[in-house]
Length: 425
Image (cartoon, rainbow, N blue to C red):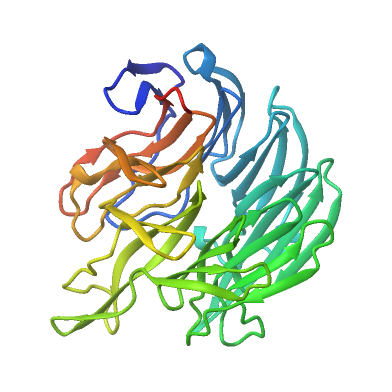
């Protein structure tokens, strides 16, 4: 399962591709699956967390040879990951919603934490009901993790969630719990920013963004787009100038100051009336590199229908906004992006299927210079489900896909890695 399938060179910024089989995985379909994999790059090692719970470390200095692996469990998906020179932190979606911490050198399990003891066990025997560790981050001497669990009773939806701060040995320093749905976490030297994509009307939590003290977990500030409905914030990133937010509520991008005061906002994909439909798209991701915020929007939605005829002109688009609030460039990523990653002035956006257009020619990973725009679009046969860009390396996990109106399986469950060309990087 771990044989190197191909090693190629390209004429673009991506060089020396390796492609490794990750085993069998049921095909994704026209609509998007939930996260089933995770990947992280650190110090010439790429770590892959898989849909059967396995974790594998590959040595990038030795043609991506397997360094170590940890057996998994088919009931548990590895869905979030972060690494340092010494530690690998893994978040799962499964019956226990485990946070697991390994030695990044040897793969030895150092400690684990069961979030289901806090957010509750699955209310139903469905994947969507399982506890979900949506994000993990290592910040100095603190490991931050956000976990949630979803439950529905008729038309009423409930989220139970906890954001944790652990020391490196697994001691719980603090926990911030609420009945809302965290989607992403950002950290800097002394703060944690938590983005909540849903804040149900039937609970008291009404802040799409909460900023916490990294050491104590105390709430320092909060912000909300102030829009009706439960949709709030899709992603968050720290900058030297403040906090950048992708708002689900009004489909804008924001720069906030350190106290969550609004500095500027930019319309990314807000409601537009086109041929009798009111269309919009959610800004799902944001990353900051070299003084530029790069936002990425998702699928078109419409008021009053789940299957609109039209397309929002800004769906599946990356927008670069300088920290004065001016749009520097935009780029069509052509499919749904599940993540964004930034390093050394570059941004990588793996794009998956556009479930309405269903064009396999759009499957790709996009590499862009944050300040100036696109550098390379590299085709992927299947869909890109996870990616990480760090230290002159890019890693992307590919999943197979079968569109409902084709009956053809495209791609495989594989790990792709590249070096990034350029003496300045």
